[in-house]
Amino acid sequence: MALASGVAQAALHDRGGGLVYDDVLDVTWLADANYARTSGYDEDGRMTWSEAMTWVEQLTYDHVVGGVTIDTYDDWRLPALLDQGSASYKWSNSGSDTGYNVRTVGEDGTVYSELAYMYYFNLGFKGYYANTGAYQSDFGIFGDGTSGGERNGLGPNNVIVNLQSFVYWSGTAYGPLSATDAWNFNTGDGHQNYYGQNNWLYAWAVRSGDVAAIPEPTSAALFGVGLALLATMRRIRL
Image (cartoon, rainbow, N blue to C red; front, side, top):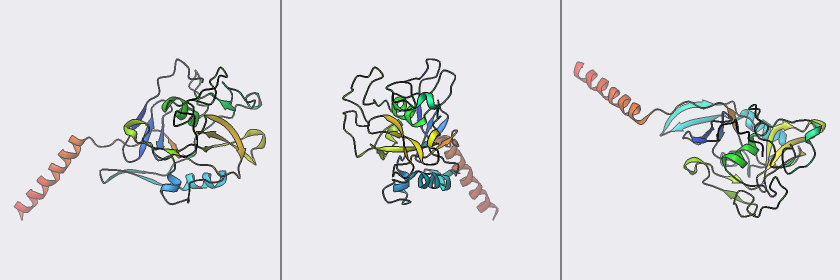
């Protein structure tokens, strides 16, 4: 895995209301890793690449905390992946686009794969093979070498839910076959690859940047007190 020593240690932050912020990649994820199903958009959340792209492009999400809508976001996308060209299409256990322990963030801050970074660094999962080529029995999102199903209660405050042990689309078409294939990441065993765009895979929505700050409890309480005082003053005047 290629997280350079000059890059800050990964940290996820629960922003409340089903949003999680990554302060290294400067992106915000939906905490629900299968929101297409949860929201009722798709029966099981598995879609072709074009269907997944359509879903995420039309997605609007209200950031609601404590019954209050903080903001509404409509700039969602599928996770970014930087296609490095033909030199990196060869299957590898380390440092390639294709295979296990793929490049995630370079020394200069270049982001190569947001999904791989989430899997390997933010969530601390292992691939089927280590970067030495040695088999790892504790690969996958369950940490025991099993695949299939879903896992809940991950990340800060256990907020990440419905993470499928299967394959997720990225938002990047595969260079040599961009009309027919697209990049994806398999959370079942930690490998990155490209499949035909007509395959039915999962989609995890992400957006660039942080989200609006949640009002501090003290500030919210003072605001409530202020409203009460105003109401009282109006009654007195009447």
